[in-house]
Image (cartoon, rainbow, N blue to C red; front, top):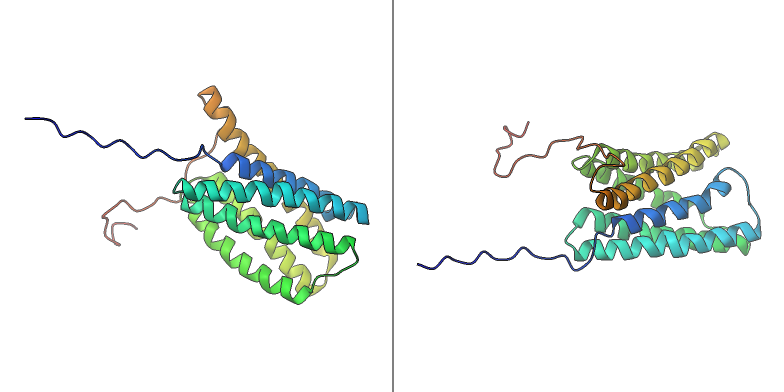
Length: 211
């Protein structure tokens, strides 16, 4: 009797793109940090930050998102692709400010609320993969919460938390990117990444057994 050949495991069409998206995010955040802390509020500053948001924030994350979706990575692809278009809006907003065009605050507030809802749910989902990924998404939730509260209260008290959240976002993104790139090259966890915060239910488990 002949043995039935074992089908080969499917091969992803692209290498792991997450580091690309995270590095682009970190560079985009770095361009926004001076503005978040009240510096470079000039035509040149707005234009310069806008192009970093376009090429790194939007460009790198869009590429990473499309490649992740092609690799059947639903969560990562959804996050990067959605966030890429948000970076395009950052580019458009900063370019407009450089030309003296102020975006409508009411529309931005409404969209920020939707983004907050999206990132709250994605934060929970990423908690099933890593505590650090959970912290990464939680920082985005804090960032959007502060943006919304700043607009609702018209208070400058939220400017500093927004700036600090942007710094933290860049830092966590860099760490995660380095963990992916360096750990795989070194063959050991040079940049340790903690395990899941939540435990996923095993396949076929009943709802009662999942608690």
